[in-house]
Image (tube, rainbow, N blue to C red; front, side):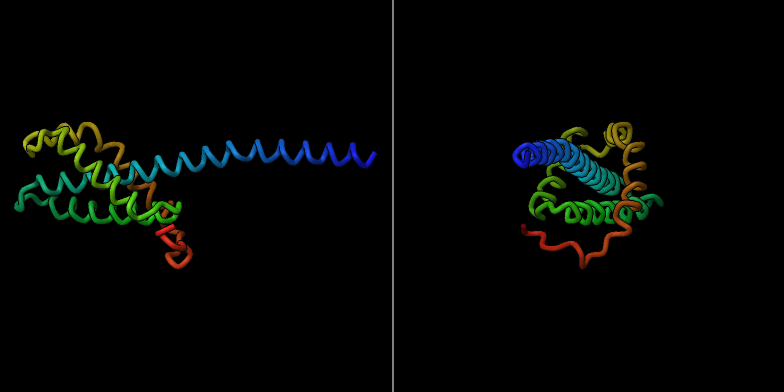
Length: 144
């Protein structure tokens, strides 16, 4: 009888662990994709800011938004235990892709606006909520 109970418990524990693993994997993938979107939006705002003339009143706003979104991408990446090198590589990669998308010409920045503005407005707003309750002293080591 004891063997049957042990077997049933082992079966239950292994089944529970198997069911929990896909949920954790899905959560991790979702967090990684959100950090990727933050990186993409940070690059978008940075390029947009760089393409605006100094006389354009929106340049200051885009520059501030770029810095803020870069900070959010870094903070969220660290929150989900990403290595700093991976975060920085992702930011550089997104920037390079977008520069390629506009063929290196600011006159083509409307292509980026069409592709990214609506999504990045939403992602930036959502990031405020995700990052706001996180305390920097609870983040652990970024080099792990």
